Amino acid sequence: MIPVATIAQQARNAARILAATSGAMRGDALNRMAAKLAGCRDELMAANAADLAAVPDLSEAFQKRLRITGKVFDYMQNRLREAAALPDPVGRVLEGRTMPSGLQVRRIAIPIGVIAMIYEARPNVTTDAAAVAIKSGNAVILKGGSESLRTNRVLARAMREAACEAGLPADTVQLIDSTDRSAVTELLQQDSCIDLIIPRGGKSLIRAIAEGTRIPVLKHYDGICHQYIAADADTAMAIDLTVNSKCQRVEVCNALETLLIDQASAHRILPPLAAALRDHGVELRGCEECRAIIPDMLPATDDDWDAEYLAPILAIRIVQDIDEAMDHIARHGSGHTDGIITASLPLAERFIAGVDSASVLVNASTRLSGGGDYGMGAVVGISTDRLHARGPVGPQELCTSKWVAIGNGQLRQ
Image 1 (tube, rainbow, N blue to C red):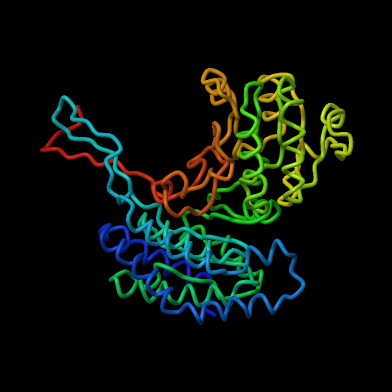
Image 2 (cartoon, rainbow, N blue to C red; image 1 turned 90 degrees about the vertical axis):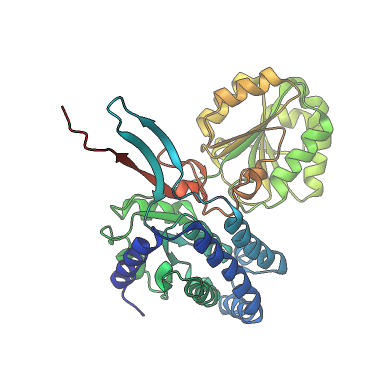
């Protein structure tokens, strides 16, 4: 295995070259990567099957994240192509002016430099990370979980070959090909070469990375997502949105974890909604007011309001009004994704202004708070940080800026 310090230096060297490449070259590389995946599909599926077979005692949820199905494979290819088709984020003029002296000043978008991705089972993160990093002119170092190493080897090799064919440095994409945890420890020490670390995984992984490095870390610890059903919410819409928010994929960070129902709509909406959720195998845990309407609902404890289940479990609370709903979200939310279901535009605007989350949705499933559904193409995760990016992290979010001043001999007076 190549030493981690060498990988980091190679990435720094590649990043200097990438910063000067055209958007057309980088887009061509991403399209070639999608084509390379098609050419190695059988090899990739065999490697993925071997990864799954090597750890037979994985939980069903973990296996689902690790497995490449036909749908996941198509997603990986499509995200590469979608990123290729996006406008080039590098070189955008973010602001500009001509000073009274004639000095022309502008601030332009440039790549951050070297991005390190540390993540767990999902192989699609491998291609998403490459897509977003390369589109924004960054070199990327990939450190996936040991469970997906065979799969990631195939993906990394294909993407490196495509990068070379497009005229980009081979070290634009690098994989740390090791299952030794010390490799991560060493990676966290490469602050002279790596500009940003993006972890994808559980809270313990993210916290350990953030506490173990001097390199800036873009993170989110929890996805405790809420949906508030207002007094005037349409029953059918409330049921459809809640079921989709919770059940479309229970194991992801923007799945619904707590449902808040206005007391004025609870008797109308909760019985058919509870039935619909139970039809999808969801365990319901409710407050006393909920259990007065649905007596066989399990009682919710204080811990339930702070739980990210990532499982078919939903906590439900009846609130007096929108203010109590927003207070609950302020106390127990994680700043990830929260939504309101209402027919009232003023009520929706109050919720938007009063809920401090990376994504706030009105009459839409919480599952839509991702890059693809926001028109961003591939993303490398969702940040609940406030600096420098918040929400889905796509190519524009992996840019920083620099000031350029053009004069004709101006002096400081």
